[in-house]
Image (cartoon, rainbow, N blue to C red; front, side, top):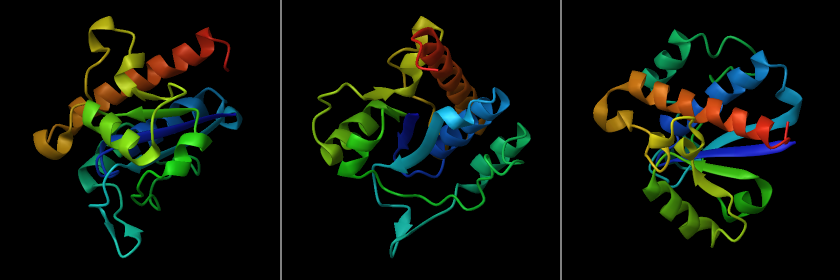
Length: 168
C-alpha cells in the first residue's frame, strides 16, 4: 500500500484538489487497493475549534467540472481541513507539497526529512521545466483552472513514477 499525503497551506484548495484528482486517477485504473490518499495543511487557519473548513467552493467547482466527486471513493463532500502532524511523517510514504514554503513548514512540524519523503508534487511532472516549481495558488490568483492543470501534471507524473519504479 502506497500512502500519499498532499500538503498545502490551508488544505482547502491545492492539497484537496490533488487528493481527489489522484483518487480519481487511481480509481479509473482500478488501483484503489494499492493506495491510501489524504491531504493536510501546514497552518491551522482553516481549522476552528477543532473542525476544519470544507474544500473552498471554487476548488469544488473545478473538481466537479472534470467529473471528480461522483463516486463513493472521490466524494469530497465530507472533506475537512486538517493540519499535518509529526506522526504523519512516519505513516505516509510520500508527503507532497504544493510549494517550497509548504516543505519548510512541514519539516517544522514533522522534524527533519531523514527519509527523503517530503517533495514538491511538481517534481514528478513529466515536463522537466516543471520540476522545482510551485503549484499555482488559486487563493491569490483566482485561477482554479491553472491549479487544476498543475495538479494533473504532478499526479499523472507521480503515477508514472510509481509504475516505472515497480511500486504499483
